[in-house]
Amino acid sequence: MAATTHTVTNQPPPLVGYDVFASDPALTEGITRHIAADRLDEVRQELGRLGEAAGSAHAQQWGEQANAHPPVLHTHDRYGHRIDEVEFHPAWHRLLGHAVSAGLNDAWSRPDGHLRRTAGFIVWTQAEAGHGCPLSMTHAAVPALRHEPELAAEWEPLLTSWIYEQELGPAAEKAGALAGMAMTEKQGGSDVRANTTRAEPLSAPGEYVLTGHKWFCSAPMSDAFLVLAQAPGGLTCFLLPRVLPDGTRNSFRIQRLKDKLGNRSNASAEVEFDGRTWARRVGEEGRGVATIIEMVAATRLDCVSASAAVMRQAVAQALHHTAYREAFGRRLTDQPLMRNVLADLALESEAATTLALRLAAAYDGGTEQDRQLLRLAVPAAKYWVTKRCTPVVAEALECLGGNGYVEESGLPRLLREAPLNSIWEGSGNIQALDVLRALRREPGALDAYLTEIGTARGADHRLDRAIKGMLTELADLEGIEARARRLVERMALVLQGSLLVRHAPPAVADAFCASRLGGDAGAAFGTLPHTLDLTTVVNRSRPVLDC
Image (tube, rainbow, N blue to C red; front, side):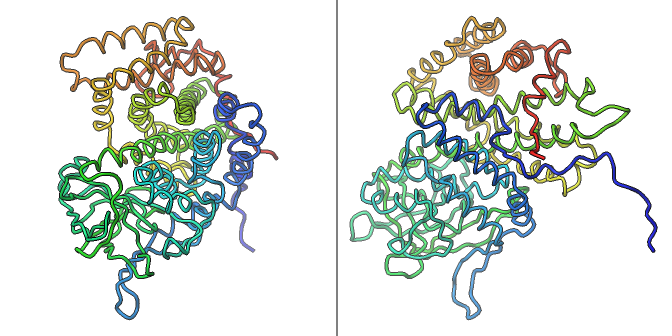
């Protein structure tokens, strides 16, 4: 008989079998705040079902399996025919299929569509983040395609369909489809106007053949892609289907899949167009950036939402672990210094979620005021929230100690995922410069932003001082490009502070304003003023198992 060397004690139960939606007060209260009363019960039930699924053992296992078995590229079949297909583990298809069946690719077909989708995106991303890419691209392709009504009529019903069909086929024979995007090239990166891919018009109106390459192609398994290429009239947007109307494969050469730091379950590729690659124009020639920018803006909001989701899951794991783990005779969460760390992390998570929901609600609002607010707030939020994700996850991992550094905890996967959204759809400098561009070209955007934060003026003296300091910075144009990151950071923090002062419990708003706006905190997490009500902040955010 084998000797028993120890009994396992002082370990937390797995954080499984819980409702990811219901356990997140920032999310549930945000839904209550923004959804009309006559639809609130319906939306709560919908998100509750998704939350239970995201917290289930099945979904957690699917996420682990999809990351343990990354996609595999097959350029040719056994007979030597070129096929350019990406093979995924069945767990990937289960995750993506569940997401599509929950409408996470569709914000366009129902009331409060963006808010419902953003909340669901935050919930389901906590099961596994990688498969969010095709969901985001598919959702965001719709406004770009509307520049070409004939294309929109053909493709929008497929892209907003709640039916997942993983096999490639002609659009006319499918009940649902996914879209990807391919903009950047080797020589240009974010400078897409330096693209060299050529588009030569054919005799049929709106049809072209493409020659060139794309250095990053998102979701290369998709049914169609929005791409940029140089047409005779300048840089132009095109829709490139994988399968042609006659059922034959389009010439879409996948050269290799990227070997990425994180986001391992998802495929990103380098692709080549060989002069026979058929595509249809979207919008006018020479208006490629203006056409595709609406897709970019929508995916930038998803970068904010996905970062909020990754932060929330990391913080939930830290709060759960420390609520059960004991050291030196007390639970970790009851020890003042750990409580300070946990409260600081919870503040960052709540601020990110609250901001993401406000932006989604502005998309649904659809007024000129909403549009102008989004023009400034989306790149500012994308800059700041995505930047905060990596340090939050790293600190949450440390709360678990050595257990957090082990793959089985799930925290290393979150840490590898954390930098992605800061890079995707334009890294930090691109976002900061985009804010400056909006300030220079669209004065209404600043007016909308100031109106938004102005509703909280007088509620907290630290917020008022921060607004005044920010306005002083805005008035000084000397060296503003070199100061852009500092300015955008302040704008994002002020916006978050104004939202929390208006909507969060006093303990949360007080701690955020003291530390983020009042300067009463250090550079690391866990340096909040000890006089704050940190216990309330921690207890508010801790997920609770049903058992």
